[in-house]
Amino acid sequence: MRYASLSLDLDNLWAYMKTHGDPGWESYPSYLDAVVPRILEFLAARRLTITFFIVGQDAALEKNRAALRAIVDAGHEIGNHSFRHEPWLHLYKPAELDQELRQAEEAIKSATGVHPRGFRGPGFSLSEDTLDTLLRRGYEYDATVFPNLLNPLARAYLFSTSKLTPEEKKQRSALFGTWKDAFRPVRPFQWRLADGRLLEIPVTTLPGLKVPMHLSYLIYLAKFSRVAARCYLRFALGACAATGTQPSILLHPLDFMGREDCAELAFFPGMDLARERKLAIMAELFDILSARCEMVTMGEHARRASASRDALRTLTPVFPS
Ligand SMILES: [Zn+2]
Image: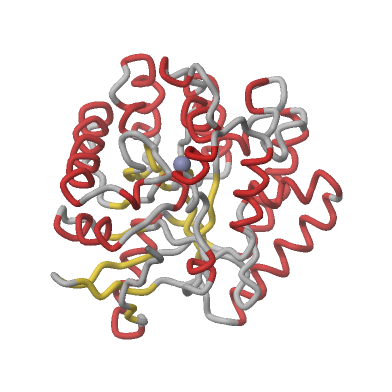
């Protein structure tokens, strides 16, 4: 049977507010205690084990610890999603990157007992220095690449809904990735770095067309037509099968939340739907995924991809300056 990895970026309310330039994020408002049990229940009902990329700052706060501990207790994999969740991580100097990753690792270990072995950059921000730092710190894989042609559109939409200053927009100019990212592979590959090789598992987009197939996007389509969203997912999985791509599929907490859960994020696509409707859409989409793929963690995807290491493409990192 074909397989697909599932991962959830555990972006918290404050992280969205910070990226969007909204005041009040500095007190780290959190919805984790409300949404994590709901996500865990959804996954348990389908007997799924996935990867949660956790933000170190959340792990460092006592108020989030019970929710984070519950993720580990349910058997899910824990990855590192940076400490401060700054989508301009690609601008950090090597020493700052080392500190950022170390701080996140320590907070995550202290909260969950797990030392993370996989990484996804905030807002899909990535640099050669980040890859070098990950390799040096013993990571098994990076999962930041998002080869999505629509990234600049998503960024323009977010900017249009925000009160960001020109300076803040410049800082966020690589948010959701760059045009360059759209031309990277959709299937796992290896980065050729000065000190060795690092496995990359990109967030899968539609092979060839490089348009998104992650759950937030499918929910947005379902807002207009649930039939169209289901057809789109079947078509996307078919395209993956036809091209020998084992997809890596991305989730977010907002996929499990409705308008009654978080008024602050009403600007976000799909956050105008009621919670029950959204969960019903998610259930339909997961029925399609489960019928077509064995669903595994990112760590398991990394192990299977590495087992066929000779078949993996090797790329030299080239990032826009
Ligand atoms: Zn994030």
